[in-house]
Image 1 (tube, rainbow, N blue to C red):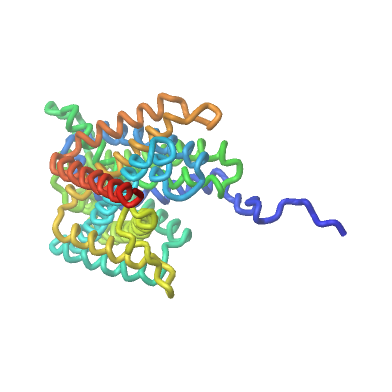
Image 2: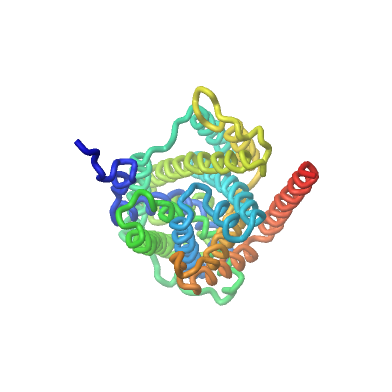
Length: 425
């Protein structure tokens, strides 16, 4: 009997099991998390009632970034994101810089998530709780335990339920007043842009949709539809929550809130809901922290293998099969940051690094040709301009620290390049 010429499972047909709804749910699971619990206060401090305008700007920039990433992911279906795209389209230096910005930015994201756990679990000892959370999850990761897709869906369901409960409690209480949404007379463009940069943190994760090329049916059609749907739903959820928060606390009350959504339910006369909100925030933050620690350690592993970071960090544990040295190094760095930084600084620094990362992704997408399924040129151009603008308007300490760390990364690259060139002669 002649051998069959039908496609085998290795051809990838069986892996394309996700439809549009699945892709949207995965996108929501990547975006709707602890960011909304953490970023509202710092954003309101920057823009006051203009926080809603900032939210819209952050969503537009996120859409441009996600679209550019999706087209690049289709062209380069390998792990690494803009670390790969920058290297292939712009040159080795830009690939390195993207990877460096990702590692430092997401390390700060880890610290912000740990501080969110502390702020909602035990505000009086937020830094201690944050460090304990990092130590615990680093130990979990060290043994090779990963957050499953089922856990992601459970977490996003819990978060959506908690946010819905907050909104219902606010508008059923009679404590909400529309006049608290009115624009302040001292509203500034800089304040709105700074709020957008801080709220960009709450959209982090949307690029997960862009990496689904090998898993969805008809990816060329499904992914471009899933991105705006997931972002649109997320924006609707966030807008509803921000309106509810502003209507009971007002811009000033929201700006000074340590655990904003807990204070929202107290102000709405639904104090019985506060423990639920705290628990939901802690679950969301722990889930996000676990995923972030996994992602940063794997990118660190890839850069260490390429000798852009110390090669010792590329070691894989013989028993647990994880990059244990990278995980310990990242865990130590995150714990140190969580012990010393405040939440606003951590979010600002995170946004600075991640915005530069996506600036490089947009620049790479600009170089795609029509034959490579280039997005409309306006999208990567707007994404690049938006990322650079928002990164420069973040709180001054975040910008200065971020610029210093990026400069250190560039110097490390140049030193490595010079050493490599001398060794080759």
